[in-house]
Structures are given as structure tokens and as C-alpha cells.
Image (tube, rainbow over all chains, first blue to last red; front, side):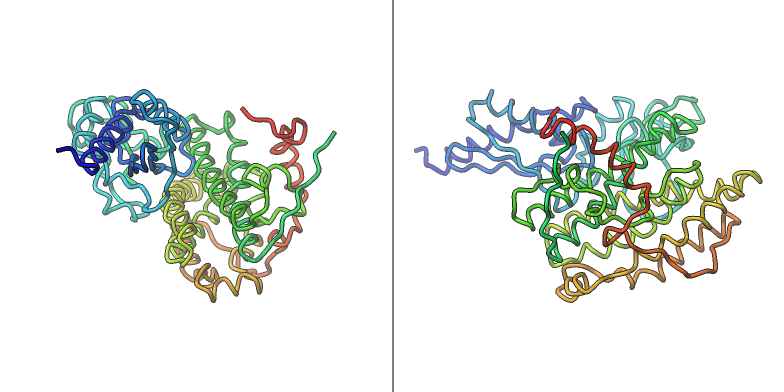
Length: 167
Length: 258
């Protein structure tokens, strides 16, 4: 017997999967679910509302992500999906999944370190080179190609690389 | 034809949000002026990234202010259709970029304050303001670290960079007092647990400054005369020039969108 509850949870799972398939336009190996940007999918009848949270206040990818979620949900058969931005709780790199971290490393971006030293004004950070695995790396710039990354260089293999800042 | 200014009903809560939004927008705009001009590519990206964070914070705060006002204003109207006397930002943030040292000292003074301010605001009884604070706090901590490293590098660098950093500190010092001042309307919000009293942060702010400035072999000025006015719309002439650039598109082509 198929109850209403089953049908709703099945619909919600489909909506979640569709939204979760959207990738970050600036780091296309990561889905928004792996990044922790996808917060919730709420079903009201056949209408679906997706909640996302920005990584940084000014992240320019948010508009694009919202648009792509709408497209993905329309394709999955949901009419006029809504995307809502939530600020609380504030996004943290602690939400990034293990799978997400592994993918980042394979893509050449050092994944974020544990966030316990974030407060240290001049705290030492040990960032591992995603190319050769050496921990002998130096900071080139606090800011990299996007808000969420810093620029580092490995002193062992001499390769510069992006580091996904812990936040 | 130029577009008329909007009118804003400045209840204490609307005014409170506008002041913080204006701080973030104007400082973000100032930093964006470095885009393509910074002394090195990494700093060009750093200053633009910080600008992006600040403008993002401004958008949240303007949206909040518009909602609190409950008229038909929105974030764009508040940013683009208020004239200089309607702006409520700190005099500090509208000061020109000057040389690289002046930009970084301005950033250092502000970020050292914003870091403490937003962290304290995370306990606001207003859940939206607390949420905005939680995001801004993390970003401000990072901005502070970036600026602090530069203060040390410039102060403890060459004679030239040291002299420029010290001149910037001396020049901008008189604009820092305004960060800690509150008026009656804001005091009521503080009593209600919606805002926090910035005056309580001054000691810790000074400690951060002393630590970094000391390591940079620079000194903080002894004079305590402070210039105020930005919070009530009395600005330096620099803001008018900034706004004419920031607002020119919306003033010329009203309602234009990308």
C-alpha cells in the first residue's frame, strides 16, 4: 500500500536529488550538497522550496546556483520551484563532506583544514600540497581566484596551488 | 533627467541598519577602486575579494533595512537613490584610498573594529541581524589578518614604507572615534538587546591595534580629538565624488538591470 507519506517522501527525495546534482560553477567537481550550500528541501503539495546558504556574503556564484537549482527541478518535473537563501546557521567548511574533500584534492585544490585555529591572527597553518602531498608549503596570498580560496606554493614540488580556506 | 532621491523613514532600527550597510558599501566601493591598480596581482585580487565580502554584507543589511522600513524601498534604491546627506557611513570608510599604506591602515582600523563588533552582534535578539553578524564576523576576522600582516610589513619594512604607514595612521586616527559613538535611538536598541554597545569594544580594539602597530615598529597617536558627522549625514567632500561614480548608472538610466 502506498500511503501519502510514502509518496511525499519519495517526491522529496527526487527533489533533493535534483537540487543536489547542481555543481558549484567555480569548482565544478563539487556539488552544492558536498559543499554544504544545500540546506533544505521543503515540499508543500507539489510545490518545492529549496534553501541554500552562501559561502561568503558576496559570493557571486549564488545567483547562478539558484538559477541552476530551478532549472534542475523543472527538469525533474517540479513546477515553479522556489529557491530561498538562509543565513543562519552561517556556512562553515566543517560541513564539507569527506567525499567533497577527496574530490577537491584530486582536482588540485587543497581542502580546508580543521577550523580550530581560525581565530589565531597569525596562526601557523599546515596545508598539504594536493599535487605531491608534502606539508612543506608557503602562503603566497590570503586571497586567491575566488572568495573561498587562498594561493599557496609547495616548497617541495614548487607547484603553486589553490587552498580552500577554512571558514 | 536626474532621478529624484528617495525618502527614507528613519526609525531607530532602519537607521541602525542603514549605518552599517553604508559602512560596508562605501568601504567596499573604495576597495574596488584598486581593481586593476594594486601594486601586485595578489593584492589586486585580495582587495577586490574583500570588497566583494563587504558589498555582500551591505546587500543583506540594506535588504533588512528596507524590510524594517516597510515601504517600497529595496537594496538598490537605498544604495543608488539617496544623496550624500542621506548617507550614514563613518567618515573613516569614505576617506580616499591615498597610497597603499593609507588604504591598508583604513582597512586595519575598520576590520579590527568590525571583527569585534560582529562577533558581539551574534548575540542580538534580532535573529536576522544575528545571522548577518555570524557571516560578517568570519569575513572580518580574515580581513583583519590580511590588513595586520600588511601593517607589519609596511611598518617594519623600508624607511619609505615605514614613513608612509606612520603618516597614514596619524592622518586617519581622528576618524576612529566615530565607530564607538551611539545616539539615543541606538541606545534604545542596545537596551532592547537588538544592538550592542560599541563603546564596550574600545579597550579590546586598542589592544589589537597596539599589538600589531607595536610589532610594526609604528606608534599610535596620543591625541584624542575625534572628528564626527558621518552618522548624521555630515560628510567629507570625498563621499560626494564617490557617490557620483557609484550612482551614475542608476541616476542616468533609472531602474536599469543587467
